[in-house]
Length: 324
Image (cartoon, rainbow, N blue to C red; front, side, top):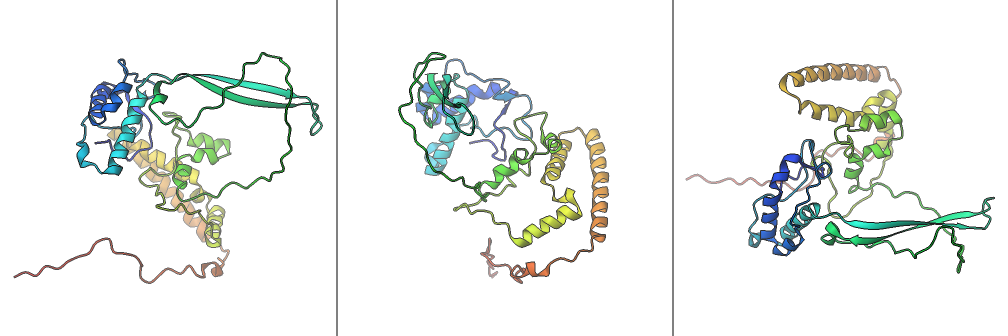
């Protein structure tokens, strides 16, 4: 009773606007308590929530058929309710807030500066709108009313001794988000440009899809870079950099996705061009490997020999039936 979940999009196509009323009815049939949140005029936010082109898949939403809630277990009920609440919230009135930033100048010398500047931010909800249906993570504190240029008095000052910590290592569970937001890790302007998505700037080109980005189950172990893995990457980057570049891979995947959206004539031309380019790249990679004579450190393979027989549980068990 929800749309196909193989997606990372948060948008719906414009043609779904006419389905909003029917889906709202199905949602309130399943959860009558949500009916009070649906406004008389359904706010579809065309251009921000609904857009012309959502890519291969649109956002996950409830279908226009209400499920029989008695057939859903506790987890299924919770998941469907989550989808229903977010769908209704997306069509509710805007949330109106008052934001304020206070800048304070403190006259004391530090690092050869005659004064230090501090700032504080706060907000106050005027009309909750769609936020009334979703869990509030806590508002920023409300700042006192002050006038520009007003003098103040410091009532407390402390010096704290702290040490910075290195960034947390990447985990298996966090890897899918990194693959999707590859553009945020790239510093080269040309590579950033290559990863941009002109059709939908909020969803840049990334590696794989939600279905192909495997998330960790249970515990979220940190990813460990082994000496062997690091050496393989160094060799790839030295012998044939394009093959070791995640940016090149992301651009290649986006070209394939683009071919899938073309008409037959344009798709055949694009496919032939991609085929020719791939053959040229493979040829260059083979030549680069042939010309690279540096021996590989075999000691890195110690303890990483593949097992002769794969270990693990069988997914399927075959049973033989006797035939009389």
